[in-house]
Picture 1 (cartoon, rainbow, N blue to C red):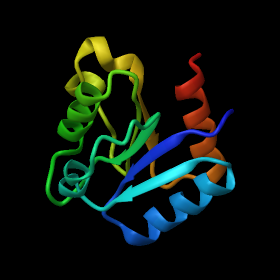
Picture 2: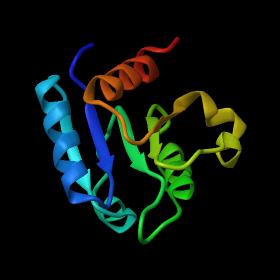
Picture 3: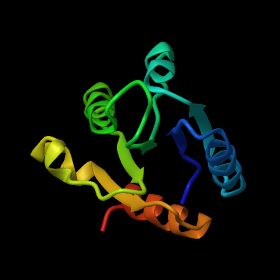
Picture 4: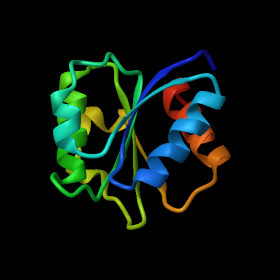
Length: 121
């Protein structure tokens, strides 16, 4: 897969660093945020994908996902959590742009999920 611009939104600093390292080693550009407020403070990043923790301290994860999808019509989102995720909180027209990866996961699981999401079925 060609290099992609990927937004990481997770309040766990150690996990953000791990994801950043994993994505950069795979040839991607990674942009890290610890909260929805940090994402909203950034200028539009023209990202290809976002990895979004569903349990953020300042925002409901699904609400942030909906906001990101609305702001960036070509963005794909990989939702991540240790708890199950119901796609019904995402508008039906956008569900094909969202996938879920349960925590904990291995780096190769993350890269495979991103590849599948970005390249389609």
